[in-house]
Length: 444
Image (cartoon, rainbow, N blue to C red):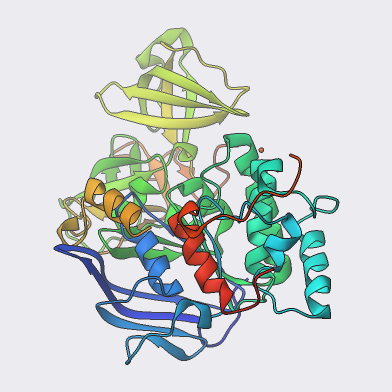
């Protein structure tokens, strides 16, 4: 977890261009000792380029990077990757196919008696006992991932950088390995930056999450902050299923078709706004006889237009009588077939947020398009949201029958030694890692 004090990683005003494309646009970022910070965003947002800048594989066109107070980029000649004491885990792991598990882990360690002891420690840490003499092709995907992690941690790096480390695993194995990696990082207390496009991965792994868009960081915060208290509509919609309900400021709160949310607001009555509602904020109740007139409580009525079973709950898509479509997530005991008429109410266990109409994120013109960004990364390897507190009532009936938003909300995987490869037989990231690690130890 994050430790008080000066950040281990400090980035200020980072800019990186690839030809006419600005991949990183004035980025500021602090990462603290022992913290797991996740960079998340869509393809082409600049997250992998940011990681490569920190690692030293790219040189910023402007800005400054400090590691433990030492300037490594932005003042004179940049410090090369092998001198930054950074452990690296690439998307495809970049294990050396001609080395065993133990030899891969030992690769960045100097020769001597400590080398054998450290390898044994790492093997135990990642639970690969008995597999020390196997080669990468004899391991499962999850085991290969753990070898890559052990190799990165073996030299006791000051920072650990992971680039989409779980993307090559199937869904069930991905969740299992993700939990294992999180436990290992917690035990070692390693300061970590992890890049992913998967919002669930970001929310489950990070002590803090930095959401990137168009080469900039839209928001940095805890998983709860970026999910429930996003600063921009982009963060709101990227970090999970969301409905932005249209509403209007009235004396004492905001009126929407799902209720009147009482709170003090700082904009004039009549101002159009949007209120963020997540699927786990919305409760459904079947209507007696399927008649809209049977419901006189807060909220609105509608019909279930679709549903999807996800582990222990259903995700419902509900079309309100107004035509607005909202999502709701309920435990599987709430089994409503498609076509069921329901009452729809907001019963959130947290403050909601609202945005002024037109409060959109800055255009991504300063950064690459998704297509440009994907190609580039392959080649290179308004105001914030406002909390809505109070209750949700039928519009015009503030204080009558509303559910307190702070109360309980919805409940809720060979034989023989392969010949050593020629340099051209290694992929680009294997060659980069070979060159970077060679300065930290001897080739086995």
